[in-house]
Amino acid sequence: MDKYVLIPQQLKLEGTLTESQFYDPGKVDAPTVLMTHTQAYWTKLTEGTLTPREARKTGFPFSPLLVERAVSIAQGTLHNALHALEHGCAINGAGGTHHAFTGHGEGFCILNDFGIAANWLLHEGLVERILIVDLDVHQGNGTAEIFRNEPRVFTFSMHCEANYPMHKETSDLDLALPAYLEDQAYLEKLEEVLPNLLDHFHPDMVFYLAGVDILATDKLGKLSISPQGCAERDRFVIQSCRDRDIPMAISLGGGYSPDIWDIVEAHCQTFRIAQEVWN
Image (cartoon, rainbow, N blue to C red):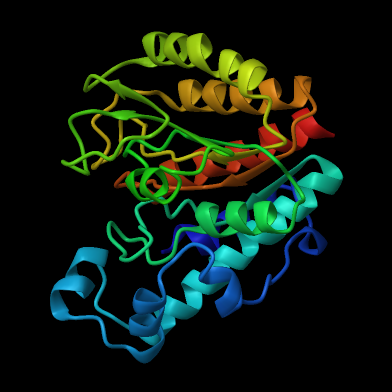
């Protein structure tokens, strides 16, 4: 959790962002959550009645503070999407909770922020097609399940095959990578796929999960991407959307390198690149 404090501190210290560019999004309301998650699951969260097994599956001991954090993250991504529709790009300093399913949480994810924001946008008629680009090292299994019968949302997950979750859901496009893949091969695969998705699906909005657990230093990642390769990945995705004037809402996703500054620097690079490309 330290990275969520250190990232804004670093961005403000170096002058990339100012205090006025950060805000508290508040909390997403129950009707919005229920566009994505089941009433039974939401009741268990709000009443604190998850079973011990359900709580273990999330990876956290249950606490009401976890639910408060989850509804704040979801509202932040929803606000980001609205800001992106107006200004082009916005970044949630957390988010990317792609392991949360309609009816349960898992993998350190309680509510699915992309799912909640995307379903709300569709419900409000603000967009007609959404592309989710999930480049966390782990498959976006919860996101795939949420949108498996929703043709207006295309889910693309590029992840390490030999990694969590052991049982993969089926995204609209899954690109499963071999362990210890390095920069050049990783970027080539992304460059083969993403432009075609953007040009053929014609999304009105892109949600981009920019996980930095692809780094070679990551203790949970199993890929061998350098910091430079991670930055090139972000630049390619962000520039590809900018070139086509497709609004994009970015969430940070995972990062588990032993040295916290490897994580902070990689996430800060996402902010720097987005600011450079979209300004």
